[in-house]
Each structure stands twice: as structure tokens, then as C-alpha cells.
Image (cartoon, rainbow, N blue to C red; front, side):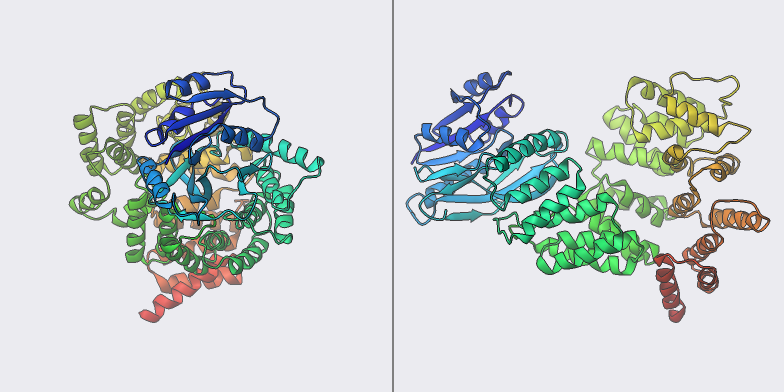
Length: 621
């Protein structure tokens, strides 16, 4: 029994070694057909033992692959693309299954899972593919684009092996290369259509291309054509339905319309977690939290046992599902379950800050030892990245006891200082020193939203008067203009472009700034063209600053009563006051405020949710 590995290439020097190394120990020959590389692809492959051949590219993937097959001498073929590779050690399982099936003529090939991954290794989804098959003249590739292996005389019979035994990784549709491939594939599909060859399932591929290229209307139209055509394509049938929902969301369709389509698709794929996640997210967006929770829960339950061949977008979202369930429990004061869900979320994705922050808020006033016991049960202090995460998180949260503990490990065990010192200085109120260190990183090109916002926060809290005497040319233009607005004594209207910068800076300041500095920064909110007050309230409530929110709401309510334009509706202020009373478990007062908000015209669904939860707590009392 001989095994041949085949691959076609063009400018794949970054990928080809990984591909070949993943199977070279079990194959008897490697056939590489190059279609015009101008890099070192061929040289790399030759050094790994590949026999190399050349093929003049004619926009036909099937033809190129079939040429490679014509050169192969083995009894079985492994045909991976250059951007595909077997999981570590799985090639030996490939050989085992080939040996098992070799004398059983019932099967023509092996079908296995393929994980589409980002360059960092994060799994986007799993699909099923046939990449291992007999070397038989009747088994060849068809279609110039999205080529697939077929048996000419009869239907190809395959043996399915799950991902625990054979798993192929694929990087070809990671975010950084997807657009280029979509443009190439769309061109080939359109050429095929012009030539009169356009099988019904090609509508699905057209939808995929237009989706990646962000043409939402065409993505939906071609997906619907695929569905209307009654096509059944192994392992691909759910994808056009996914395209429709995601394109509707991206296009900005009304959420209630999206919900109706999702209902249809759940009936079509009742055991697949994907559309339950879509439904939960849609319900969450319109603040129907109780319903959303049930769909998140159902998605999590299905996710644990799903083993179907159709794509499951929830496959790597366990952390997300538990976070959302935890946050809904957190909203309704069910802190015991919230705690459990947040811990489960972080066990699945330890550095997921959205789950980390509310978990910390739940234990913020516990003893230092209790907090250390909790976080040390989740994080591994023998891993540098875990200690780094904890140090930076507690620096921002201004928990000095935990910061001192983890920073000590960070410095002594790993001899790391980098920006951690800057975070520590910032946390302890040494804003000017912190700013100097952040600014060094800012100027060096380590630019991201977090560094940008904390650098601006440190500068503002240092008390510099930007307009008179401490000009910093190293700030990017947008940031300089933002600082001018912050320190402008004659406030003008603030453009919507600064909303996200303002709110991100607030998130950095909110746990460290003194009341005077924070109130001065909050005062700028009244000058924004697009109101930011509700976003501010949400940030403060996330940080359990209920008394502060009540104070701001009360102040805005009073000046609004005097005729001032505070860019927030009266019923919204009343609702947020009710929310703060609810979060502090003053349910009778909360009920009064929620009822008043309803009478004054507050219509968002979250009011219904909080009124229901309030009644339930009052009944318990």
C-alpha cells in the first residue's frame, strides 16, 4: 500500500513547509505542481523531498489538480491545499484508516473535519471535506472554481472520521487573506457563468464572495437563489442561511425582521446551535433579556453535544454564551448564577475582559484572600501571559492589594516591567509619570485603542492645560483635537466622531479619578452632538457606581426641569434612577420609578424586564 501526497501551489512559501511537514512522515511521494510561483515555494518543497512539476495556469483548479493526480503512483492520495495542514500527529491516524479501508472496496475515500482558523490559531468554524481518497482513474476533480472530487462511474462512497482522529486546519479564509481570495473566486465564478456552466450550488459560492466583499444585497440574493433551488450540498447547506442573517444584520435591517427570519431557520436546523445564538443576540439587542437567556442556554446545551456535518458557528463560543448568560443574571441581581457563569466563561477564555470585569465587581468587597483564591483557581501563575493579564487588569481596576500581589510576581518571576509600571503609576495616582511612559509607547508605534485611551486619560488627569503651555506635537491629529475640546473653556458642540474616544477614556478614568476630575470630565458630555449620557450611565453602572449615577440623574433632571437641554429624555433619567434603586435592592422605590418612567413614555423592552424582576423580588419579600 503506497500513499502519494499532492498539492498545487502559487507563491505559497509561507505555507508549504507547514503543509508538507504535517504528512511527510507517512507518504511515499510528494507531488507538487506549481502554477507560476515567483517566490521560493518550489525550492522549499524540493528541500522537503517533493517532486516538483510545472503547469501553465488556465484559471481551472480542477484541471491543475487532475494533472497532479496523473503523476501520482500511490494507491491512495492525500490532497491538501498549501494553506491546509493536519493537526499534530494526526497523519499517523490517516495512515491507520487508509490501512483499515485499503482492502474494503466499499469505500472510495475518507471524509474528515476541517477547521477554518485565523492566523493566531483561533477556530472560526468546522466544515467537512474529502482530502483522502483512492488513486483511481474514475476519481477526479470537477469545476474550475470550488473544485470537488467526484467519481465518474457512480457516487463517491466515503468513510467519515471525526476530528478527534483526523483534523485538518485551514488558514485560507482568515480575515487577512479572505478578501483577496473572494475577489479571485468571484471573477472565476462569473467567467464560468458566462461560459454557460453554473450549477445551482454555485449560487452559494457567489453569496460567500459577495458577503466577504460586503455587498450585502447580492450576498442575500444569491443565498436565497441557492435555497430556492432546493440544492443539497454535503456539509454546506446551512451556509447560505447564515449569510442571509449576517448580511441582514450588517445591512442594518430592523431587528424584528431579523428575528422572524431566524425563527424560520431554527425550524430548518433545529439541532444546530448557530441560529439559537443569532436569536439570542437579536433578542439581547432589543433588550428582551429573559427570552435571550433561554436561547443562550439552549445554544450552550446544543453546543455540548452537536456533532453534525453542517457548520456550527457556536463551536468556539462557549465562553461567549456563558458570559451573556452571566451578564443577564448580573442585570437581574441573580449574583450566584452570574458568578458561576462568569467563572465558566473565563475558564474557557481566560483573558476575556468583558467576563472578567463583572466577575471582579461581584467580589470587589470580599477579603483579599478570598479574591486571590478565586483568581488563582482560574489563572496559572506559572504562565507569564496570565500574570501579565491580571497585573494590567487590576491596575486599571485600581485594586491595589491584588495589583501589588500580581505585579510582584510579574516583576520577580518574569523580570518584566514594560508598561506594567505605567499602569501601576496610573492606578496609584501618579498620572504625570504614567503619562510619560504611556507616551513613549504611543510614539513608538504600539498604537491601539487601549493605549490610546489610557494615554489620553493620564494626560487629562495630570491636569495639563493643553491650550496654554503644554503642547504635545506627538499626539495624533484626532487626539490633539479631542484634547482641545476637553480643555476648551468656551465649550463648543462636540462632533459625533469623538463619542467613542470620549467613552473609552472615561472607562480608563472611572476607577482612578477623584470626584472633582471625574465630574469635570463628565461635564463635557452635555456638549456632544450625539448624546452620550446613556452610554455614560451604562459604564458607571457596570462599575457599580449606583450612587454616582443617581446623583448625575438627579442633577440633570433638575436642570432639565428648569428648561436646560441635557440631551436625555426625562423618562430615561427616571428609568436609570429606577435601575440604580433596583441594583441596590431597594425594590419598592425601584417599582415606583419604573412605573413613573412608563407613565412618562419610556418604551424600551428593558423596562418590562426590570418591572417583572422587581415584582418577583417584592413577592419573595
